[in-house]
Structures are given as structure tokens and as C-alpha cells.
Image (cartoon, rainbow, N blue to C red):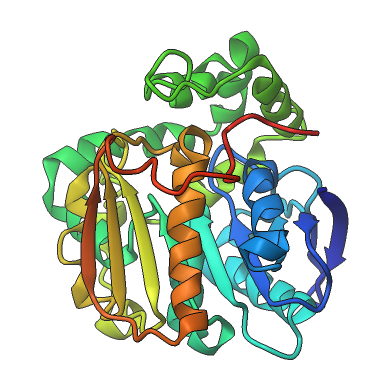
Length: 335
């Protein structure tokens, strides 16, 4: 069962959240991306709240600017330091006496999570990232890879002053294409049902300016005439190292985030488990929730069993990821 609540943070921001599980249990915090919202985690919230899957307190906030969360009008309010501040404050409310059992994130939520883990490693026992580039490899690829520069060109569309109006045209046609260009409607793991589309419309109708301000506030995008963006950026290694045990789940058919982004990741994340999903796209949480639940469950169980974290890579093919899928999420939405 999904609970709906709003947390007022001490610095004046309120985050609307979806949750499952008992207060006081070890906490898993789930961070969504663009153009999503907290509801994308519902199946995993319910799954990991069940006693047989850990009995966690599972919380997914709508990040600032999304759905019913606070949406500051100043673009600067969406800089990374403010986004991290939100998560640190939320963790203090939901897990006041212990670190988070896990911080789990996708896309823009992952960008926030990478920075949170770098700056506040004691906030969490484990970090899990699903198709969200580490800032070190992302900057390298934006500066040096024509493939990544082309794949990220859409970012410069999203910072246009008229982006909100353009995205809303024709029943959000351009936003649906973020999904359908990766098989959401007709691919082998099609997931974009009318029910899910209704959830997305309800979120987008609350406003697109907040979500777009993430892109406007960040220099991590391809250079363009008169705007060097990432080309002018330098990040010291101290801002990039993540010493928390980390699981990265990377869907290899992500056309926006090519696989070059996971090359050399171990230089920044020494306690890394990397799972490469051969037949997944950027929307893996929608496409294959059973697979995601299984990989996250195994990773979290390692912490409970006391297994030492070490760097390792596992490639998952279409034939191998159906293992132990009993009672795992199936992709069908429940209300």
C-alpha cells in the first residue's frame, strides 16, 4: 500500500512523498529523474516494504520542482548544493538515528545521489544508481566524445525559454517521444500503457518549469556557440570520489547515455558492483522491475550478510535475468 505524505524541511522546502513500510524500520530512499516523478518507484516501494524482502521503510520524494513539492522560481535554486540539501534533510527526518540502508536513484535523481554520496558518505550504508552518469565520466564524455555530445544535444533544447510551451504542445508529444524512441510503446519490454500515461499527464500538468530548471542550472551539457557549458568545467578528484559501497545498474540500450559513461568508473568508485543489462534502455525501472528488484535485493542483502564490497562487473543477457523472479514486481501498476 502506498502512503502519501509531505515533509516540511527545515530550510523552507516541502517535498511530497510516496512511502510504504513501517516508520522506524531501516530506510530506503528512492530518487526519480526527468521527466518522471515519485510514482515510478511504487512497485519497488511496496516490494521492499514486505518482510520477506527486507521489511524496509521505503520513501520516494517528488524532487523540488516536481508534482506537489516546492517549486522555487529562481533557477539558481536548482543547483546541486540545494538538491543535496533537500535529500540530507529528508534523510534526517525519515532516518534520524541511523544511516539510510540505501539511497537508490535514476537519471537526475542519480545526479543528486552521486553528489550526496560524495559529500555525505556517512548518510547511507549503500548507494544504487540506475542509468545516471557519474559526474566524472559524464564530464569527460561531454568534453571529448562526439557520440555523447550528440546524445546530450537535447539538453540545450530543454534550457530554451520556450521549452515549457513546446513540450506541452500536442498532448506533450515531445515528452512522450523521450519514452517511445526507446521502445516504451512497442519494444520487447513495452510499458507505456494508458494508465501510466495518465500518471505522467497528472504530473506534467502541475508544471514543467521546475523540472526544466535542473537543466538550466547545470553546466553539465554540450557546448554551443557563446556557451562553453561543460567544455569550461573542471571538477577536482575530491568532488568525484564515492567511497560508499555502490551498485550501478546500466541498461546498455540507452540512446541518451551511451556505454562510454561507465568506462573508468572504478577510478572514482572503488567499492563498485556494475551490472550491465544487455536488453534494457534508460527506462529500465518501467521495463523490467523484477530484474531491478532482484539486483537491488541482492546488493542490499550483501550489507546484511557482512560481505565486503569489491569492484566487479556482471553482464546480464535476456536469457539470464529471469532468475528468482517469483513475487517480484511485474510491471503492472496497482492502485
